[in-house]
Image (cartoon, rainbow, N blue to C red; front, side, top):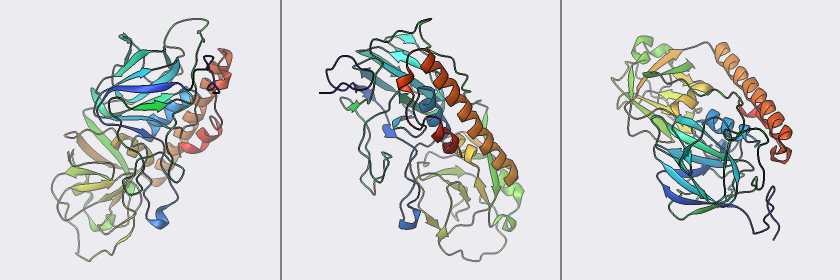
Length: 347
């Protein structure tokens, strides 16, 4: 059997074994491009955190990784692995010692990585250099019940790694392996959601839409429900079902708001006064039930500028990661698409 990249043991592919898990899936950036046949994008709810976690360990931003939602995870790794945990605020440990978030570290063979339930935010992303092997459907590992893709991981499940860093020792210092300057999110008392004008904005009083709203426990990957009074709409003309974008802020007759996320159905018939920006969608991926949510209208030009800035930030991070890996003898950890896909993925 051929040893995986970076593995000198020759004893077969390295694996993760789940010791305990809450809500854990293998994710990537989903399967865009199939809306015309009614297939949702799905994929990581906080794409920025997932892309950063992958980028700092040398992967292309859309490489399969683990998404842990509102719960904890314990993994045993069979071979030395280069890992990054990003997303929600948590305090991971390896063999009982604290390791960083938003920077890479090594999990030694046969030790346990523990990612506790988050203290702030909802979703943690765990990327392994080289990525994870999982069954793809239409080019993605993202779970989708309709397609029969993906499943929740539980105790005893095993996931194969495509690479390890066996026998590698950092020449200068112990973990964290590198400090690459990825910036974690700021956590305030409320989530401020940037939105741009939607097709029915003129039918509402903006003051009725601002909030504050309360994130409902009924939220899921299809949409975030925000509880509050029903905004008054001028007129009652029925809206026929039509294509709606990810991020559409809908006003259903039942009250509150419904903000469509990456698992959304491709058509809907509620009025849409606003559409959440790309960066706002990542903040929604970290919004906890009971959290306060406020809408902030921004110009479309500002939203586009923010998206471009994020793309540039991810490219700079990819360059720093590649330089650090190559200079430390881990140049083979810089995977295909690491830099080129960073240029495109953040937008």
